[in-house]
Length: 137
Image (cartoon, rainbow, N blue to C red):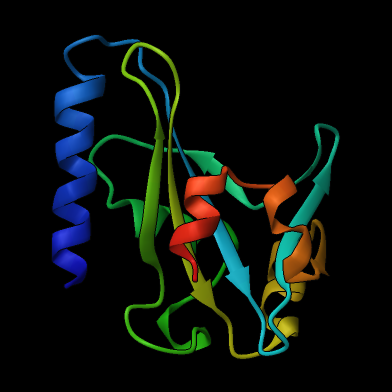
């Protein structure tokens, strides 16, 4: 099943980024803990769900896990990160959203070394588009 997600990410890159050579792509992850809260990071740009740039040639879920400093064993369930939505348009910015649940809060907080906190699920709508939030239910 993970292979299908990787192929989908490469397909998006091949069809949207490569032909225009100007469509930036980002990944964003909604990481839940056992209490149902989700992780947000605080940096100079403000509070947001963990995210980063897509690097061509690398599977997007691997980029997410590497940037978060986590591996498969620190997630509850298989696959560790599942695709829940793609938002944006070619020629502009496209964001690929993934969701997962970690086995312990300390796994994420200790690994990132950034200002990570967990926020109640009721605040999710202020961090992600409505169609992505709907796919989480």
